[in-house]
Image (cartoon, rainbow, N blue to C red; front, side):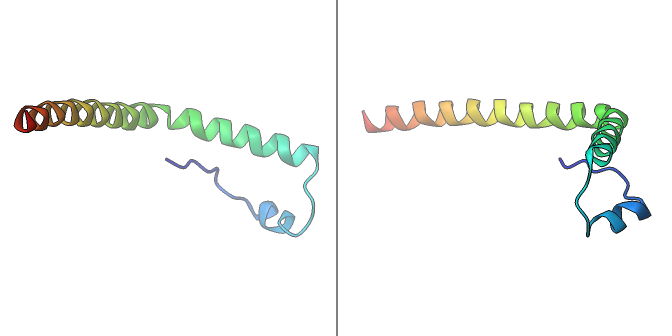
Length: 72
């Protein structure tokens, strides 16, 4: 999941120049606020991915046991 803050007109102007410390602080704060607004979505997506991983490992382990029994 990629979270990016909403760009402002000043950001487009600053693309051509080197950012200063204030620009970095603003970008970090904006990213932080954007992340906080979407934290429930991040948790939901992470939960789904975790369940997929869990069931994938369960299926993989059960297939490994099945193939081991077929070889023996």
